[in-house]
Each structure stands twice: as structure tokens, then as C-alpha cells.
Length: 178
Image (cartoon, rainbow, N blue to C red; front, side, top):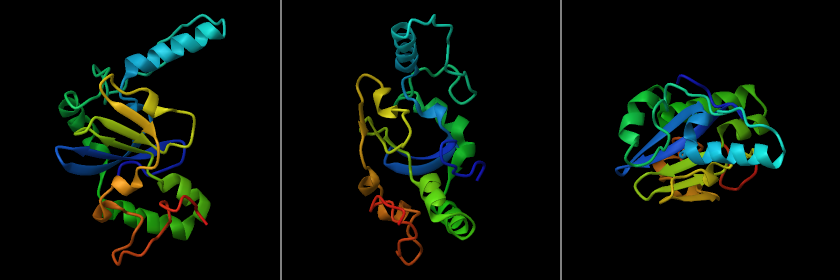
């Protein structure tokens, strides 16, 4: 695991493409699917505030270089760039167990709660990201973006918050870290 889940810094993203599911733990910014829409939102906000826009405000990172719109077509170019962030369900489960022993339950809950589920097959992005980043507002035009619970869409075998005996380690699906 290159990066560890850490609330407000590194997020956990579930991706489904060609009926194949993968987890990623990565920086947040690479997952705004339509960066053109994001840039326009910055421009609009600055104009409303009466401030001169001196953008761009979206850093050009290696993973997204030349990919302004991440969709089912551009994913083939993007996938090798983010391979370093891929993590298995087992790795996430083991890291979750370790965190539960070394960190507070609340910190672990917010760090390990999956933030995004992106289904490239159906052109849908679901967000549970807790900060005002609104990933769901910045999806390509022919996509659906929603801020809603997506955990039931994840296959049980991929739910790292269950142990090997299918016992809940941390109750994300109940929506509480208690």
C-alpha cells in the first residue's frame, strides 16, 4: 500500500470497470472526473466574490496529465498511472484492523470510510466524501453524479470492513462509528 487512508488527505475509492472491481487509496484531487467543470466552478465563485481569477487552481498531476475528463474512454490511459494506488481488499482489511488497535475508533472510521464509488460501466459516481468537495457535481455530461450511500452496491467479498468470518470490524453501513 503506497498511501494509507487518512481523513481529509487520502481517500478510498472503489472502481468498477468492465465488471471488474478495484480499491484505490490515493490523493483526493485525481478523482474529480470533469476538471473542466471544476475549473469553471472556480471561475464562477471568484467572479461572485468580486475577485480576479488567476487560476488554474487545479494542479496538473502526473496521473491526470492530459486527461481533463476521466470517463469510460479515458480510463484506459488513466489506469496504468494509478496502478501504484491499487490496494487489495485483504490489505485494506489488515490496515483497518491495525488502525483499530492503534487509533481511536472515530479516527479510524473517518479515515477508512470509502469516499467514492465510480462505476465506469454504468457512468455513475457516488460520493460519501464528508467535506465540501462535491465530486458528484463534476462528472462528465453523460454521467450521473450522486451524493448518497453506495455501500450496498459493493460486493460482500470486497467489503474490507468485514473480517474473514464476515464479522463487522467497523460499521460503515450503519453510518456510525459507535
